[in-house]
Image (cartoon, rainbow, N blue to C red; front, top):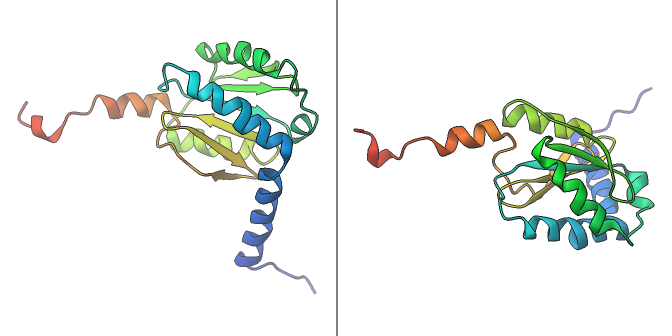
Length: 160
């Protein structure tokens, strides 16, 4: 007889995995010690991009030159909105994800099934772990949607 997991049981398993990742020392150092400082130091939070790193690379992070390497790698955001890094913070792969917010968010969810994804948006960093967004802070994941929203007119100017 095959045992099927209930929705509650599956949710508990996913939460336990999320907690294990979020309690990992290297993950926390990367997220709070390095990535948050990058987000805070950016002048323009309207440039949307994400950093992807494998769990193995997080385990083997080498913090000595990580800050300088990450700063250099983030400069790639002019031509890409998805940047994959290694345990040194060096650029491994870059690509440009196209589509609307829902499409890009779904791609990030899929990528996070095997990697950790940190999305840098207007309101902060949204983490994607095991196919789920954690502490989702951002509304837009697509520059196209962000621009379309910003050019909408205010209700007070409806006659114009």
